[in-house]
Image 1 (cartoon, rainbow, N blue to C red):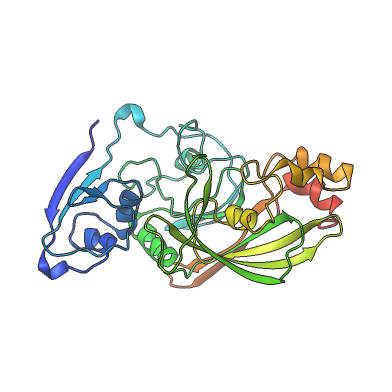
Image 2 (cartoon, rainbow, N blue to C red):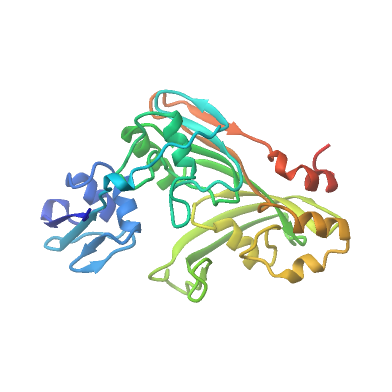
Length: 328
């Protein structure tokens, strides 16, 4: 089924708005979150040029073209009968403790075996967006990262939560076990992330110089060392100010402290340099990356109360954590 296409000329009354806000306030799209999804997917053009920054300001007289994805009957999501660890559930949203190894939404190689498929089996009438197979999804975790995700059950909730993510008011804390011992107890890492020019599975930082790079997306991670372990590893907490793809993994790797178990951003030499054969074997056999979304906090869209959730490392980390004396 072909995408629906729209074209509009920017009016003077709405000029100088951000692109995502313009698409919402002009009535073209039902929310800024959905506008951002289309922009990030390269489906919005201004004067024939594909835009990938929701923050770009529009000018009077510019022509905006939008493609809205449509899903045919053959592309419909299939519910997956899979037990989820849902730690909060109400009429507007739920909070899920995602296991490692589970992809959040359908993508290449994972059409119907994702968190979204399991969600639609348990929850009816999720916010379906444009039928783009991401109902209710406001933020994501990498496949091999475990931890907390909030899921919106309707469009109003999805927009309310997305606004908090845009304004960086959502509380997000991750735990990670990394190679080496950082020099500073606390550090803020800031860079502009782009897709790697050679390896399309990876991202990297682009040097900003005096001005932000044209394609990079700003990423800010606040890192605190919790425990420098005698075996040559460290336990750290990472507070996200932004939430870019692979953000923590890139920032730790580029600071010479890659996360253990990460198959993309580590070299084999880091593992070989650890002195303990037992520790090397535990890491080599670890079925996941040692990264866990431990805390999540946000304001509820209906009650306007602050909610806070916290989960511990899952059981698939038990052997390693016990060896490191981080779990009884």
